[in-house]
Amino acid sequence: MNLLLFFILIIASLLNFTIILKLIMAKFLVTGGAGFIGSNFLNKMVNKYEEDYFVCLDALTYAANLENIQEIIGKSNFNFIWGDIRDKELIIKLFETYQFDYVINFAAESHVDNSFSQEGKFFSTNVDGVKNLLECCLNYKITRFHQVSTDEVYGDLELNSDKSFDENSPLLPKNPYSKSKAEADLVALKYFEEKSLPITISRSTNNYGPCQHEEKFIPHSIKLLAQEENIEIYGGGENIRDWIHVLDHAEAIDLIVRKGKVGEIYNVAGHNLKSNNELAKIILNSLGLKEDKISYIKDRPIHDKKYCLNTSKIEKELGFKCKFDFNNELDKVVKDYYNKFK
Image (cartoon, rainbow, N blue to C red; front, side, top):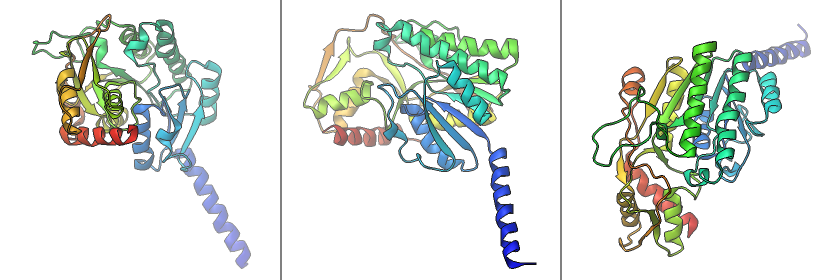
C-alpha cells in the first residue's frame, strides 16, 4: 500500500472516530452555570466527565460572573452561551443545534430581599423560564430534566421544633422567591405526571463555598469585616439555617441526574444547623475578632424561622453522603473571602 494512502486512511479513521465520539457523548445543557452553585457544579463535572459535553447558558446578571468558570473555558467538552432561559427562540435554537440529553436548571433569581420589590422578575425567570425549558425538553425527547430547587418551598418550622421536612411535606412558601420556586417545582411535576417528561427535583439547604455573590450572608459578612465594619444580622439573629458545602451539593445533583428515579424529589442537606448568631460568631472566631463586631438591623418583612430537611431518601436510595467537614471548610472559605475583600 502506498505510504501516503496509508496515512490518509489512518487520519480519516481518526476523524471518523472523533465524529462518532461526539455523537455518542452525553450532552448537557446547564443553565445558570456562571452563578454560584452552577459554576461549582460545572468546574467539577467538566473535568470529571471528559467523555460528556457541557453547554453553559447564562444571562450573566449581577450574580453571575464568567470568572467563576474561567478554568473550564476553552476545554474541548465545554461551551459557554450568553442568553436567558426566558428567550424561547434561543432555547429552541440551542436544542436544535446540540440535541441535548440532559438539562440541569440552576438559573434563577434567588435573593430573598430582592424578591419583595421585584416579584414579577422572580416569577418571570423562575417560572416562565422553566416552562420554556420544559417545553423544549418535551419536544426534543431528552433523557432527563433536573430542577434545582430549595428547602424554602416547605415554609418554616418553629425555632424549638425537632421536626424536619421530607419530600412529601406540603409546600407552604412565604416569600416571593420561595413561592416562585415552589410553582416551578409544581410545573415540572405536572410535565412528568401529564406528559411523561422524565424529570427530577432537588431541594437543598443553604450553600457555602467559593464564588458566592457578596449579597449572601457569609461573603457579605466577611466583606463588612474586611472593611472594618460590623456583621449585620436581621432581627435578633435567632433564625436557623442548615449549611452544605456547594461541592457536596454538586455531587448530590450529579448523582440524582444520573441515578435518581424519574419523577422523584430529593432533599439535600449538610446537617449543620446554625442560628445566624452562631454562624456570625464562627466567622468572627475564624478571623480572630471579638463578638462585639455584630450589629442587629431591622428584620425582613417575612423572615422564616427555621429550615430542617430529612435526607434519608437520597441517602438510602442513592447512597449520598456529604464529604466536606463544615468547621474546617468554613474556616477556609472565611479566610479566602477575607483576603479577597481586604
